Each structure stands twice: as structure tokens, then as C-alpha cells.
Image: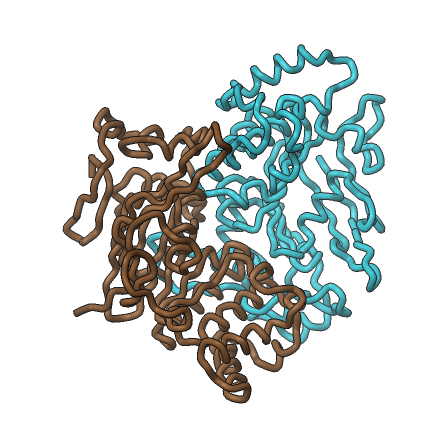
Length: 317
Length: 321
């Protein structure tokens, strides 16, 4: 179980501190794919950075901590301050753009063994890498190539191979398929699902595409303007969302074969600089009342395992 | 006689990659024949994955790229090939672009309303006072107010709003057709539909046709009248959008449809064929989709499939259609 306790993360800017993640608490069970959804600027990538322990200027973790629930080499619990030592061995990260995260002047195979455990020999590990890449149905020649020689889909699949090679306990993926075509996207998502099923590790998957979440996630966490708005089983969320924002996100997707008129979410999210009172979604919400504008709703468990932060969640279900 | 919205004949564009010794020829467009006729404004979608040549086709139509050979005609104006071409001003009155990333389309050192003003004075030939009126009318039709836009720089807008400004700019000359290259791919999924619905309403109010270029089949299904699917520089299937997507006949169209992450049906766990080295496929004689195609036979390697006309008017480029 990975526990997030009241995370408040801020960015330092010339105008002062802005709260990108504002008091998020979450318990993630082991061995599932958790989807994190929300619009740009809602704090989903910042949350992922905090989880990865990649905290440095201008990002500051003001309060809260992450309990990873697994032990390090020294037998102590891993925390935010020690997680860096276990990057790519216990926790790994798949970025959005593989081109800007692979070193363009180093062959792929060398980048695989950047995170070599101190007690392992290089050539031995390289043999294992070759076998592993073959197991994933990727051409072993790709290991000897430079990043620019490969297609975007192949690079991203190698990133997946890299992130899963040491069988980490936690895999973080930040919009890993957003820049890719649908066919390639499907290939990568099926690969990720397959690997997660075999390794039984936990995966946190950030995307703003609700269709992708429906296809691969077990649980979902939806954020809006730095706050949590809904958390629960993906099936339950897609069947009967408890928050109007989630409902609008799902309904805004067009489907082939469905001629209904679709509406996007109207308006824009509030600026995090403003003095925000009440429910942050109130200005765009069709159900909003005076209560919503003055009082902030708490994240409440309405049905077992299904949380929502809305005054009218019961009405919606 | 119906108006020719868009007509291309044997359009070819060859890019050469690499140095002197390892030169690779990429046929970004390979004998593209498209013909769309209609009296009413229509939305024509071009779909395909990256490297399918859809952006090159858009650039040829916008006169940003000179094709290697072939002819292209948009609303009776010759844009490529032999013959009398319209003047730049006349062309820009008829054809206007919208690009993928609005933050790159506008310079960050200029206020965005100057772009709108310049379009009105240069292309429409109006004076300053008349221009203000036309600009504010265009902004109103995309759901913005002139006072909210005046004097602002691009970084003061959200992506969705700035894309609306660039649509407003394209509307100022009242063009016959707007070429929109991936106009919503940079915009959040939740806000995408607002822009898509805007295209639909502008088609009615401004009587403007759209050439909508995308890799998102779901939005293409939602708005288009005609749809062309491209793969590695060739068209593989073209016809009425709803017909093509409800009963696809080319194996590639089927593959695309099955890959959409829909919210009503989960994927089956089955391996899918991906291309390994993309440049290789451009060199293929015969059908370029053959090494990923479940139906491929010997004939696919020998002969390039020609258009097979179907009773509903669509054309399918496959030996087994």
C-alpha cells in the first residue's frame, strides 16, 4: 500500500508560491493500475513528481509525506528523502516524450545499464537486457541503435522495457502515449497491461484521455484545480460517476457510431492565484448552488471504496 | 453542376533524406487522387498516422509546399500544376489555415489582435475603422469578445482560447475553405468538443468548408461529411465519413478503428502488427500495408492496388475489397 498523506506541493515563482497540489491524501493498494485524470494544470504531473521524489527548485513539498510501504536495502522504510537511491530499481518513470529523455549521442544499450546495481557485472546485465527485449517482442538490433534512428513508437516501447527491466515495485507513467498514433498507442498500452499482470507491481498512469483510462486502469483518481474530486474503481466511475466534473469528462468523448451531440466542459479552470473559496468547480458546474460557492466539499466515501468531493454526489448517483 | 471543393490528380511529393551516399527517397504523397464535389459547405477529414502524408497534402493545398508532380484544384482555383494560378491575395481570400499549436502560430512579442487587424486590412482591403468591425464580428462568432482580446499577448490566453482566436483570424476573409491541421490535438480532451462543435456551427453560419486533418477517428466521425484514410503517402479508403467508419473495407481502416480507446468496449488482448522501420515501407512496390496486413497474399507484393469503386460511392485501394 502506498500512502499519500496530505500532500501540499508548491512552485516558487516571481509572484510568490503557487499551490499546484493542495492537500491530497490517497491510499493506493498494491498490484493495481491507478489512473490519474484531469485537465492541464490540475496538478497531476506535479503529484507524480512528488511520488517520484523528484523534488527540487522551483518545486517544494510544503507538508505531507509519501509512505511507499516497501523497504530499502538497509531494511528501513523508503521515504521521500531516500527514494532517489532506488530510482529505476524500485521505482521507475516513463515520460511523455521519449526523444527528450533518451540521450541522443549514446546507444540505447548503454542507457539501459545507467542504473546498474553496484554488485552486477556489465556484460552479464547486457545479456539479460537482450533476452528481456526479445521477450517483449522488440527487435534486439534496436539496442545498438541511437535514439534518432528509431520510430517514436519503438523508442517509447524501449522506454517501457527500460522502466520495467529491474522489476520495480512502482512504475509511474506520465502521458506515455499522448504524442503517438492510435495504433502505436494501443500496442504500448497492451504491453504495459501485460507486464503489469505478470509482475504484479503497482502502476500509476497519468492521462487526460478518458478512453485510455477505461481500457487499462483498475482504479481512478480525478483531480481538478490542485484538489482531489473523485477516487474509486474505474468500472464504478465509468458506470456512475459521483462528481459532475467526472461525468462531463466522460460524456465529452465522441464515439464512432454514436451520432449524439456532445458538449465539452464549458469555461476554464480557476486560476490558482485567486483566493479560492468553496468548491473549485462551482463556476462550471450545472448543479452549483450557494452552498457550493461558500463551503468546500470534503472527499467522502459514498459507497465502499468510492470517494467524491461534491455536496450533491448522492443526487448525481 | 456541383462545385469542386477539392480535386487532386496524380499528386506526388518526394522528399530526399540523408547524405550523398545513403540517400532515401520518401514518397510523402504518391499518386493522390481525391475528388470532392458538393454545392453545400462540407467537412472533409484526412486521417492517418504520423508519416502518412496528410500534413504534406495540407501544405500543398495551402501552397506552402510545391508538389513534385500533379495538379490540385480548390474551389476552382489552381493551387498546384500547370496553368494560371490565382494571385496571392485572391488565394488567401479563398483558402485559410489553422495550425496545430496556436502558441507557435502567434509570435509571443506581438499582441494577437494585430494579426487579426492585418488580416482584415491586407486580405480584405479594409481601412482601420472597418477592420475593427470585421475583427470583432469574427471574434464574436467564435465566442470571444473583442475587448477581452485587445492588447493581449499569446501567453495571456489558454490553449483553447488562443485556438479560437486563430479560428477567428481565419474567418475574417470569409474563405471558401479552412485547412485545419490537427487543430485540437494540443487541447485538453475535455475542451476539444467545444472547438469541434464550433467548426460545425461555422459550417452553417459562414458557409465555410473545412479540410480537417487529424489522427483522431472519433472526432472525424463526429464532424465530417467525407473522409479519406491515408497510409504512407497513399490514400487507402475514401468516401462518405459515416459509411466508411461504420463498415470499413480496407484492413488498415479496420485496424485504426479497433485501436481507438473507446469507453463502451474493452480491447481484446491480442498482439498487433507494428511497423519497425518506417522508411522501408515507402520503398515498397505493391501495397505498402502488406507486411502488417492480415489478408496479404503474393499479389500485394507485386501490384499496387488501384481504386475499387463501391456502390455507396467510396473508393477502396485493396486487392481484396
